[in-house]
Length: 250
Ligand SMILES: C[S@@+](CC[C@H](N)C(=O)[O-])C[C@H]1O[C@@H](n2cnc3c(N)ncnc32)[C@H](O)[C@@H]1O
Image 1 (cartoon, rainbow, N blue to C red):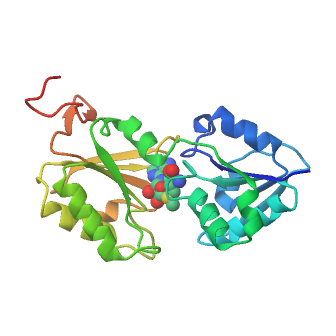
Image 2 (image 1 turned 60 degrees about the vertical axis):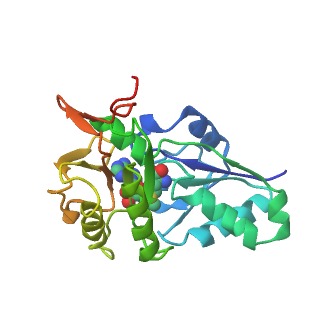
């Protein structure tokens, strides 16, 4: 039988934010490959399905394992959190294809979209991504910190709403504080800043503050941080960014 590989995302956490298309792909798989906690989000679908759980930060090994299984004729699903194309396994799979066996380029590989943390976090607080926005990962595991700073500066100067993924971890406790210091040198002190932990789950927790008051120790690795644009504001208990610039027809 011809093998296949589909990269899926489980969404931000709750089962009801996993798409029906992803559930259908999971039901057909012979092999599930992924980081253990993400595989744990998937209930047992069939007793004959093999689960290949691995540790965090071995994405390329995991991708190669999945490609080898698909090349041997298995129906493989690689499982990410959120959306598989956002700071996740879909790119790792294509990196492995690029550097790997020529035959892997002929495999049936697909990516199934999912609900990324940024969208779940935004929906928890209102509509902070209603204007132009960008997403930046603060992790310097795979890029230089100078690159992160250059992108933060450019995003702040262009007045994007900025969604910060990977804001902090035990190994990287100080980077969010450094990012806030840089943003404070460019953006207004009263700019809204949102910390949304475990967005889209029953455990979600929201902290709303301003850039002046933002504390880098508020976030952990389950937190998505949103820094507003100059137009982002509060109405009632919601935070939103209007679709139009001041003075431009609405
Ligand atoms: C390696 S990235 C993976 C992103 C994932 N592929 C997605 O689309 O959401 C991990 C980061 O995503 C964010 N994240 C993932 N799930 C989250 C959730 N439920 N609530 C808040 N942030 C989350 C955190 O910033 C975390 O450090």
